[in-house]
Image (cartoon, rainbow, N blue to C red):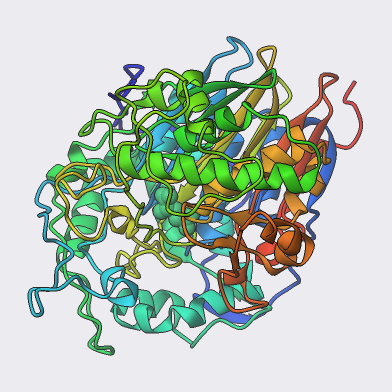
Length: 613
Ligand code: GLU
């Protein structure tokens, strides 16, 4: 059951362009890719101070969020402005063609609430949507299936922004989007990651005329050159001026539906690019509901996360509840418990979690301490269990060991490794943790012609093969299960830590590992984020960064753990996650932390390094 707090998305025309000065001036349009530009803005992975904080993967985006805070905006205003900026500088990970999940702490009321801005399947989708009619077999996942109209879900990001601003923000949408529109117009300095991601997606992008025009007009953008996106600048300005009804019941929506149904094929590649069925009616019925978070107690903290349709909150929460049954001493025993707890929680995620509008997701049972106590019976403090471990039985549990297991479900994981996370805090004590995505790096590969943004391929987060018993099977109007896990931790009702990460299903383990590092092992937040990572998602081998294997592999092998590095050594595919976090001390001191090195390093900033009188 979805725990909706009765705030449907407001689809309204906005007249807010006139409502205040721009946060800067408009720079004239230029070509999409131009010559060498200045160096990118400096970035720090840790910043401490007062008056507000922003952490994201990108220096331009963090700078924009901080500027909004300095001008009196709150954490929600800053989150929307930062997210819009990430749509410019991280267009392959996030943007208005995608979706996401936002968790908000309201300092005035002490309430934590969330917005489910997940993309939905169109009403015309069929159970065999991912089967190639030519072969009768599922399309090869990458690049064939992900590069398609059929993978595109109804975007939820504009509705998320409008809902957040209406409910908690102080800026109108037009004003929150203005700095990002300026950034798109002026351009940003291409870094190695952007150039690499463009190169890696070149075949997918060349499949479509619109995407070729935007990202490959003069070949792969060179690091150090300036990348401009005047189409996106115009789209942001029009979205601000017309309101999100322009997408959900207006001309932009008609263009999105047409693009999904008839992707602008170039004929330059052999990819099949099957079309989707999205209609303007699918856009008109989209909602981004405000929901209660998942909430659990953990060693004196209250941990709030994202309820289904994401599996983030239940899986992080259940893992913590299992961990709370133990008090291991030292890093290696703690890491053994961490790996075993997530395997158990992932078994339950695969068995029970899907869109609550379609599935009766047993959230209360999954987060029940008694259930965790019983699941903890399967965690041997001295030895790794054989994987996959079976799911627990939510229908009958009493916390007593040797209860029967339900069955032997293995979670099939086809989630991408893109996405982005940002965390903001303001001078009043409001906090936002917001993870947004277009799923695969480069999403569906389809740019809406002339609009400057990519459409998502989020529907590939449904299980590829249809199984009527699978809570994550394809259904019309359904949200595919997510792993996104924006999380806010309170102590005595006050926020102490907010964080999140990209990384497909390793989002869950990444958030959990940072929590364990910080809360259980006592690492500082920068050290907790920098520490090498491992992810046990109920698979035979633990997925681990080489640095984790170097540090702990031998000691954990003694428990029976085996390890596999996720991608080619030295590549970003060999990294797990990209955390952006903010810690809040009782005296108002903020510590913003981003990755020091993963994905080229993130950008953390505070409004003022010293106390503002
Ligand atoms: N689509 C994934 C999810 O919703 C996230 C993809 C990623 O992090 O790269 O969980």
